[in-house]
Length: 433
Image 1 (cartoon, helix red, strand yellow):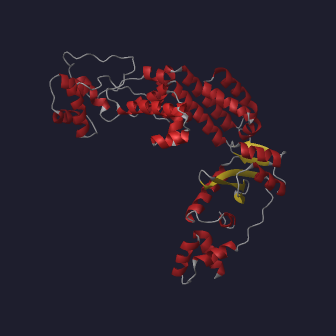
Image 2 (cartoon, rainbow, N blue to C red):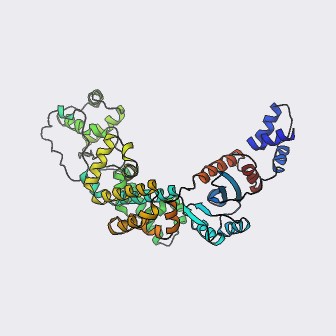
Image 3 (tube, rainbow, N blue to C red):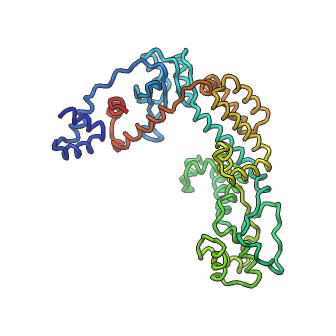
């Protein structure tokens, strides 16, 4: 009976375990289930040769702890109640023999590993390196949005070539980015918020106080305070086009030719594949009647995130349309073309595990020819060079630790966040994964 109570408690926790045991014919309170679980002996820490280190949140944004795993056996070996270098140093001193330490780019664990096991080889996780490179490529795409807008192609209206040119209508000019539509609320709100944030900060308010006054998230305030207004406006202009946008040239031509009935116009574009609602057509026709409609063709400008995804993904995974659009982006922006080549070379180094031989040359090319964000990434690698080279040369990585962090999160949620650290440690270490 005691073994059954312990097994159920390890599997589902105290309160759910008590309910399950009642169905099995054992009336046991949740406190008894938890006391049996807490009485389980923690397995002795084995000798670890390849150690994986990562953090997890006890209380997100406030309290963090450390998870240690044996990468070779793929099992957790200990939980530390802190995320500090001193706690890792103390654990390594009590458990000698660690030869390789897999970690992310955290300076806390880098310092702890250097002090606690100076002879051990530190390995930077490859996934985090790719994440940092992706962020640098996306910043490059953000910085070159203007040349993408100039080279963007206007949306073609399905069946628009079947309609005659509108008499007296002005032709749509190509080559220049569209001006801001009249009454665009998103652009107006972006300008106003940018001005409000800068005004409050100039008055001496902190970012937290500014966020409270304006009712914004602190991260939003930080973005308005640090990012250039033109970049934010360009990002707002490059939002995903509405369903009606490809059909606006046709609606304009029909309207200027004398058809002002929104119902008739809706039926005509619906026959040509318009997937949107009747209300969208009515609203746009109303702007044509009032003379406030934007008569410029909206241009297809891929977002920086889209461009980053095309660059960082394998070419074989891209569709024909994505390959064509990426080719247009590369032809319109030389810096993005260089960023794509450098990102592809970094992927090749990662796949071949040739960091020891090729990473130095790649870093030099980035510093000479890459964009400013990529140069910042390459310079950042210099601060942790030995661990980065090891991460791109050795077969070890932190994937096992990341998986166990997910498992710890599952156990925390199962306990509704009320379990003490001691009980959480028992649930993680005493139960086989």
